[in-house]
Image 1 (tube, protein in one colour):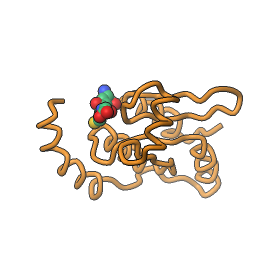
Image 2 (cartoon, rainbow, N blue to C red):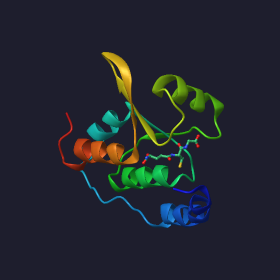
Image 3 (tube, helix red, strand yellow):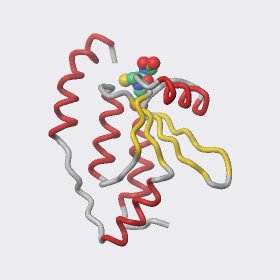
Length: 126
Ligand SMILES: N[C@@H](CCC(=O)N[C@@H](CS)C(=O)NCC(=O)O)C(=O)O
């Protein structure tokens, strides 16, 4: 997206982010507890007003997920983690911790949203 257009759209995206989304997925308390536990392995590296990050944050809200959101624009430590772990400073990026090996760093808003829907959209949490 051209940067001027991106700057012009940013305030609208911000308002939509704040007002436009509410949790749509409801779970039993037990199911939600399992989902919350699974989400502890996830962290979203993002910029506050990046439209691609906003899209992913809205989907996280819609799916009723408690995923830690890390600011890779203003927080130098998170920026460094993203660059060293994922290989580049591009957001959004979902870090998926793996207890048995190295973490997975998933870039591309579309891929992240598709993964979250597949993992948490249906009521199947391993
Ligand atoms: N195709 C990517 C585009 C992501 C993108 O362009 N992100 C911008 C911020 S909005 C970025 O990370 N730019 C790198 C930088 O500003 O350092 C997606 O959908 O996630």
